[in-house]
Amino acid sequence: MTLSIGIGVAVVDAETVDFVRQAERLGVDSVWVAEFWVYDALTPLAYLAASTSTIKLATGIVQLGARTPAMLAMSAMSLQALSGGRFILGVGTSGPQVMEGWHGVHFDRPVTRTRETIDIIRAISAGEKLRYDGKVYTLPLPGGEGRSLRSPAPPVHVPIYVASLGPANLRLTGELADGWIGNSFFAETADIFLDPIRAGAAAAGRALSDIDLTVAVGLEFTDDIEEAGCRHAAGYAFTFGAMGSPTHNFYNDAFARQGYGDDVAEVQRLWLAGDREAAQRRVPTAIGLGTNLIGNDELIIERLRLYRDADVDTLRVGVHGTTTAKLDDLAHLLDLIEIVNSEATATTATTATT
Image (tube, rainbow, N blue to C red):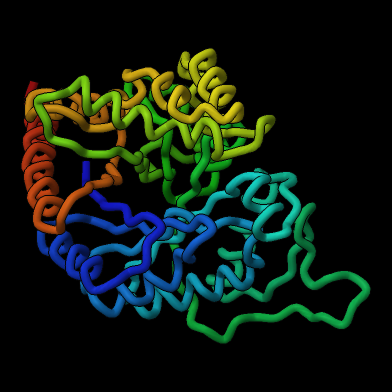
């Protein structure tokens, strides 16, 4: 299991660059930059590419439909060249509120759009002449003056990770993606997500181990577990109430499949009714505790073992506080991950000799 860090919707300033550089020195594997409706995810990574040397640079996520597949391929190839091969393209379909309200793009056929975008990016980055006949994209456009083109850039592999929550998109992830960007994830109910990924992989002649499984968690070392759990849970009120429309909220659907359907429905109702404080109080503490790393060393090691046993490869950790405090927490977490990884190595060695 490896460790990555996430950067939210914030401008990448000198303090952020210093934090990422220091995290790189600690041994953090990758840094992920988000994209909502503030700053884009690609530009900050270009800046970080010039300021780092070994850490992988990932979008978490770019919104499909906001750019044409060809434009996304061009940006990805540029970042792969600028970073010396350290770029990871994390993609996702977002939701109707953002795509239709911010980008003016119809939110339709999200799984098909994901598939076709991946196909087109891989064709362009492999140096193939671009000709595509899909349900969302047809290239060149029929009846016009466009012609099939080939990029003169050197062919390059761009790892593509997919942020997926629904069963159909999870199966697509298993079939096509280099990695999965997981969210709303309880290690105890991992198969809700991993079974469809596993099925998609098997249909394509792959194994689950061929896909880098990444899961987002917050980190807080504390002895006041109940208070921290409540605080982290309260943050989900925005997710359940505002990260989607009343009829389309993929996060709510994911939590419902894990046994929290009544809870998220009530949180959404309270939020949409304007009672945001009540919505925050209504989020079960178990959600805050189960989707994050919260507690003392013993409790966090216990949770790390659950992620390890669920076949999670990479934890994308959100940390808060001063740069010094964040780096101290990351260093300590790396030590705990090393303990858990060593246990797995020892178990494997013992099994191999018996």
